[in-house]
Length: 209
Image 1: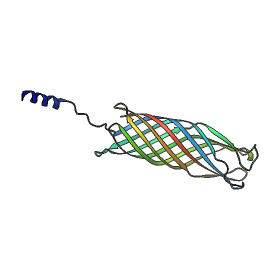
Image 2: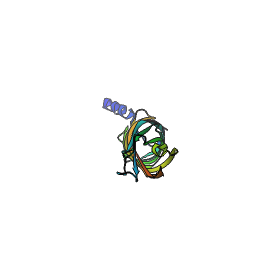
Image 3: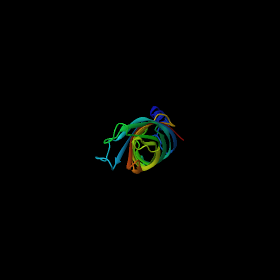
């Protein structure tokens, strides 16, 4: 009986390990791959939609957010990030000569999203949706001899990801996102419409406070 009582005391004295607590603010770094595809429409051409301009480049940036974990392990959060996407791509236009080329350069993406996930101790799968804005520069249609233009495009972002609590305050993650932006019209010797969309695959490391 004495041994049983001693064993019971030892069990009660053992530390109790709770599941990881995801609640709190965090700051992080992002890096990975960004692919932009620009849908171009020139009404004076037949067909009016020309081959899309695509470019895959390195992407890197910063993020900040806040998560709240409920007792049911369900999680809601909000996050903002800015991603820099250097790179440009030119393509020959269908219906035009070799001298008619269109160039597009994407400078950065800014996102504000809401997140929803379900925690499995140190694992957090989640989905996200929200608002996105991107800045395009060095827009030039060489065939029209026009000056370089630039534009901001707003749109929506959808995505999913997985975070892992590597340490108490260090979070590793990976996520995919798709963004569709509203089109804008320009005049390059004639009506021209651009509609960009992006596909991003990014890794992250964050510090949770």
